[in-house]
Image (cartoon, rainbow, N blue to C red):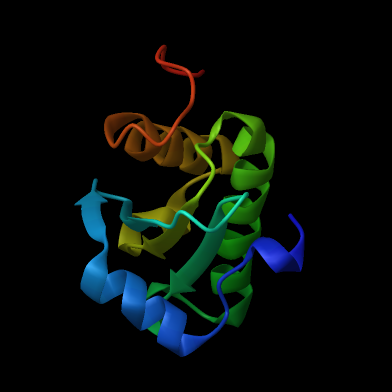
Length: 118
């Protein structure tokens, strides 16, 4: 995932939190907002210190980035998406995190395909 497609600035995070929509499952919380002037979706990741040490937090972020990379062609463009990891993610494998993320994106109709991805 190119760095151009990431949300890094705190103001952009706060804007998505205030003006975007939200949806959650036990493992992840997703905030998303439609932006007409974008040609590609952008993602922001947040993993709090309560989840674990720096190694654990960075591993979860790597898993989430890789999941987005694999789902890149199936995600609707023109969205800013912020993902917040919850406590259960620290004991999950990459495939479990990807499945949880796919579930959220499918439920909120952020995937291009109408059929659920595996």
